[in-house]
Structures are given as C-alpha cells and as structure tokens.
Length: 272
Image 1: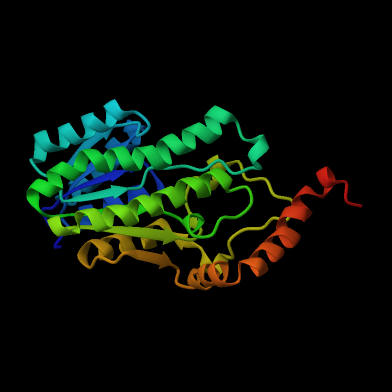
Image 2: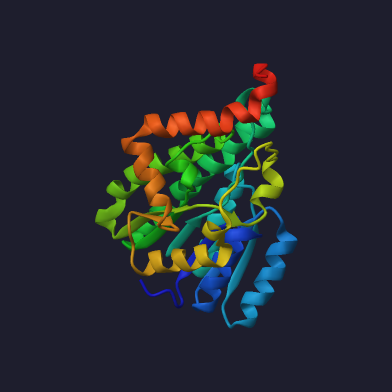
C-alpha cells in the first residue's frame, strides 16, 4: 500500500509511539486522524503535520468509551469518506504485584483501554474497510504479549488478548484485502514508565543497547503498512527471549523467580 493520500487513524496520538507514527504518516503525505484524550497536544501535533502539507483531523476520544469510538469513526468518514489505515496504539500499563493493583483504576481500566478499546475501534472501522475491499490494521502489542513477567500480570493479559484477537481477525478479513499486523516492541523511551508506577529494588530494566525510540517504532509501522507481515518483534534480539520462553519455559521460570521475584519480595517473604 502506498501511504500518500491514504486516510490513517492513529489512536493514542498525543505522545510517544502514537505521536511518532502520526508524524511519520504526515511526512508520507497521508491524511491523518489524531485521536487521544489530551486534545491540546493533538492540536499542537496537527499544526506540525499541517505544516508538512498533510491534512489532519483532531478527535478527542477516550477509547474506553464506545460513544467516543463511534464519534471518531463517524467524524473520519464525514471528512474523508474512507479509512485506509488503523493504528491501534492507545494503551497504558500499571505495573505492580497483582494484590496491590487497584481493582478499578489499575485492573479494569487497563482491560477497558488496552483490550476493549482495540476491539471496539476495529469493529467500527471494519465495515468501512470491507466495503472498500482494502485496508491495513496495525495493532501495537508489546513483548509482554509474548513473554509475561512479574508485575506485568494485567498488562501482559491485555497484550496477550490483543495477540489472540489479531490472529483471529487476520484470518477473518484477508479475503477482503485487509491486512492485520502486530508490532511487538521491547522497551521504548516514552512516557510509559512515568505512569506505570515502576518501583524496583533490583533496578531491573531493559538494557540501554536494546532500548528503542518512538521514531524507530513509527518507521517499523510504516514499513508494515507498505509490506504487511503477521508480526514484527523489534529489536530482533527479543526473538531469542520469545524462543526460550516457548521451548525452555522451566529455565525462564527459574531465572525470573530467583533473580527478580524473590529479591524484590524478600522482606514480605521474611527471607534473611
């Protein structure tokens, strides 16, 4: 698919990966719909993209609310008449031990945005693409959607759900000329960590040499639109972890529990 003049919806476009994807589409000459809750940031980004010569539409939308999703799709059709690309990027994480997560603010909210937001937005866009007999759907997953680690229980559950949803959807809609792709980035330098509530004694984190920028992920998304693949793990080194998790899970369990879980919780476990 050529991107110039195509109509692309990007959710979670107010910062991080979504912002970078929207900007990249603007550079490619697409008509970009910017969707997120923080409309002031969307408007600033829209001005930047418009200066590139691309058209934009700003839609304030909370993806946990069906009425906002319906409004997003209807406004897009009213202005541009079609939808060629959907990037389901909106999402967030609250990372902590399960019993410490708030049942509503942390657990329910993550599922509402990360899972239901993706499903409902895709559900509303799909009939438009099926009528066109063309389209590209890019679902932003995470390494947590392939390898679940402690404190990521709900976030990983949400991303595993997106994985399963996308796999089934890909097999449903391909006859209509619609491609469904999944992106699995490792650690990305965004606002994610600022809002995730990470507080680790071990200071465990993604090695710096494997950290991605939002722009690198955006470039990967554009490549997937042009040349669709079922899934893309970036950087590729994470594929080794995925392989180990699948074929030697006992080793991964042992290592994770003894090098992370126990050291992090030794006070609660009364380990001296």
